[in-house]
Amino acid sequence: MADIRWKGGAAGVAQVNTYAFAGTWEADDLIRAIAGTKKADLVAGSATTNTVVTNTDTNFDALDPDTYPELTSEESGVTASVPTAGTLTLTANEPGVPFTISLTPLEANGGAADAQTIEGAGTVTTGTVATANAGPNVWGTIYNWDTQALPADTNSVYIEGGQDILYDLDQSAIEPTLLSIPLSYTGNIGLPKANELGDEYPEYRQDYLIIGPTTLHLGYGPGQGSGRIKIDTGTDQTAVLVDGTGSPEESSVEAFLWKGTNASNVMTVRGNSSVGVAVFGGEVATLATLTTDEECQVRCGTGATLGTIVHRGGELTINSAVGTSLTVYVGTVTINGTGTVAQLTILGGTVVYNTTGTLGGSTVINGDGILDFSKDPRTKTVTNPIDCQGTGRVLDPDKAVTSLIVDYNGTAPIEGLGTNVRVTRGAPA
Image (tube, rainbow, N blue to C red; front, side, top):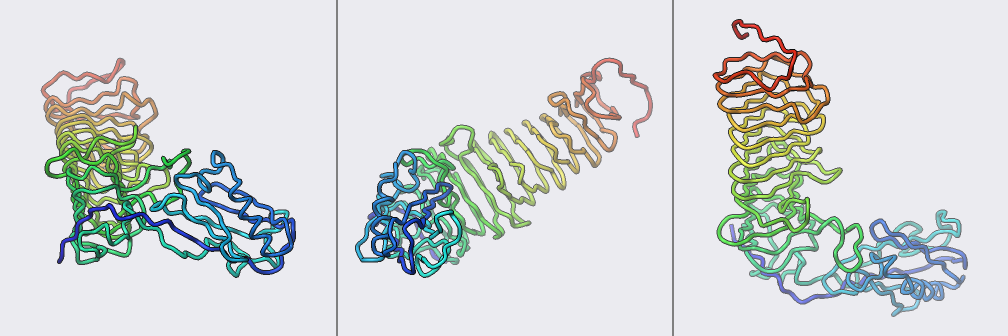
């Protein structure tokens, strides 16, 4: 098992794609250029193929970069040219920044092409890569690695310093033994949802590093850490250990963003860490076990499938169901939305129950724990009596819980249940 280390800094090489035009064209035919969500329809302007290509070159470069930054901005767009008759070439304006631009031949009304083709077909094409993108922020550039070889399954991969890792992020084919990112690394891994190069637009490039390490260890040792690390472990089973992160790069977005769908994934978060699990719309993640500790701040999105959760400190926000159990020792857990909680044990700290999902199992509150239903007025169901011990409390002054039953074995006065409540002495169930 060999170690390999990221250093970055390789020379930038501009990506070049070619698009060969052929077939029979008509002057009112269209060439549709698409990058991400942005679309531009260019008119062929001729029945002669070579002239169609020349016109496409002219029309493409005439696009307003403020309106079409995905296509033509100086920082992340491309420039068209015709070095060879019948072939359009698109070249990245910034070496080291890749692009994916499709061209589709269409009829004047936007219908499917009849006899005109681009790259030998009448359907969408992203062209032929004549020169691959390379540069200081590209995972797949060998000169960014200390061994001048790319990471492989048997490697332990260390990202300890060097530049941002922003492009060629789909590394789903490799499963290194270890991916290690200490606090000494202050660069960014992955891209924001909104492109920051030139005019802002929805990023269409891969924004997570997709990789399947057996162990992912993040945020240990001295240093200030990174404000953006985005990792997708896909279907590979991964043990994620977070000892710390930097301050978040973006407002309202955690510094470390993770997703992965293996049913046996586990995650432990400690220290001063900012962690998000499948926090963006449409994202999914699965954790068999999640353990949180110390001063961490963790948020789980609506697409998170969660099994056993043990919360030993910090703040945890859950926006989905808890499938097996939630045990809280200290700190605050807030549960939002509509997800159910299979079993809840509060040995200290506070659980704010802002979900309409049923609280099942045998709920236990001990020590100075608090179960707070008061922050969300929606109707809630608790399946079984709540076993309240020590100085633990249940807060439901607005009677959000239907048929609330509390078996009280505590040492503090009963409070937090509002008015018009009858308390009857008797043996708890």
